[in-house]
Length: 295
Image 1 (cartoon, rainbow, N blue to C red):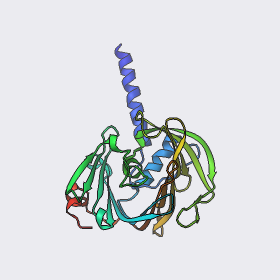
Image 2: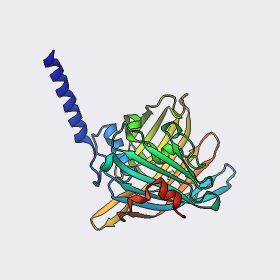
Image 3: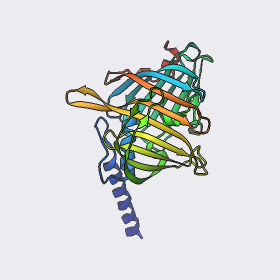
Image 4: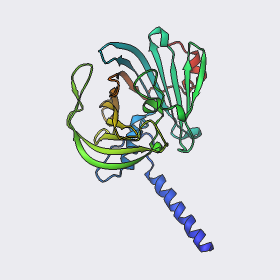
């Protein structure tokens, strides 16, 4: 009996070691490779989405809320992120704040994501008009993100551990006609096509199909299906390389479009002024800091 227990313990240690070996290292660049599993590809996708190859990240941009009749509302935003790389048990801290118009100025979402996948993220919503913060739980992650077609999960809280994965095929993404300009983006991009199933029961989608760019390692197109297997939402992401130095470049999101097929409403996010490795102060990433800032 002791030998069996010892053997099981050895197997557990070996599997833990194998997991540790596969874990991506902070501050390194990764791209998907032929022969990788769906899990390995999606690990890289999340690593690049949250820019864990950089010490920190900051960006600004605009968001357009577009009605089926073509009417638009515009808001401005800023985003900052700092990579903790496991210090104090934290992987990274992320903050998004609205800066225009006046009625939403200062509205912010702050997220702390932990190394331990079993530890729930800490997420706070700061509401300046009420002068109070609200803790957002995982069960609220399907709420609309600041009135858009995106959910909180899609923008800032979804993690690699939240789904199971299956590689469906390798296929070329033909391109996406960008809604605001009519320009074709991400044309003829070789991709891995992956099925993602949420681990949460009765979640707001039953599965999503994700196209991961083989070179950039980012998800460029997603299809969301309801419990009846019907497509109800799509999400497009434009990626490009940003040169950091003559020898280093980072994959970076440039624009996003989230469409609700049921209503015809969609939300467009455009990015600009992207900067990496600026030496951001970690004290910026606290509830106290976002409640005292004047954006």
